Length: 417
Image (cartoon, rainbow, N blue to C red):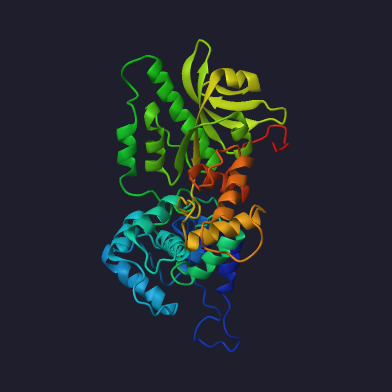
């Protein structure tokens, strides 16, 4: 499997293995049957001159492309049936249509999005995967740089084991030549994202003035933070200042949380962010917060490159407006006192891990003790102590649990506490 990653020396060893024949000289066949599974790069490797002999010994080739929309339902049913699922179709008709749109029919993307959809439905206590569940899973699936398949680095060990258990239903088991060249380099984007982005981007030609520079800086800052997350830069010339959130959410699985923040919140959340800066004599611009030294100096990346500011210099130029790019790794909804169910049980378990909630059985009810535990978490991160699990608090919870978000780089190698 993943034969496109084999070194030339290994391919040569495989060729030599194909020479092995029975000792009695029988013509019944070779001793070893070898099957290579790989992505499109495998064909490119075999086409090289040094692999000609191996290429000539391949007796059968098969290319698996995208699955037609009409075959996706039977595909899911087959995998569920093989896994022993006796509950019928777990995906609604709308969910199947959305799954095909989100994956483009690519088997590995189908498996990844379907697996995460099943995980989300399980955690929410739902017995059927809905269209909204698939759409959320497709938008939130993080990318990976690891060859050999999709992987969600933000999952904790606990969630990863659950994902693997559920993977027996739909995920895994498919390797193909063809149609998968982009897997492992970019996350799935829902159809229409490109159109949405183009509609929100200011043209690169037109009127000159302060707004143009601000829009150029917004595009650069977005690219810098996306790269910190491991996503490819959008490469847009300009982004209208009020449309940053919509452009990011239309083009990537990430969300944007906009708030008036404090310097303490930047330090504690420890997440790359976009700051709105008013430089003396240079007008308003957007710059990416990418680093912070242990002395408290802040590293910003703007159109003119990286620069270090002292705390007082930053506070003189920054009024607190901040945009954090983040992802809701577990698709957790906002929760308030009085809520009940599986998500409350999940929240209580995480709060116990952090020591904010005493050990014991989960009540599955967002009671006063749970609200007090949420308030303690909010206090540590400098957030309003509302006792409600809103977006900012959920972001802080993921950071506290170290779910895999990028951290602010420390130039000195020492971590800000």
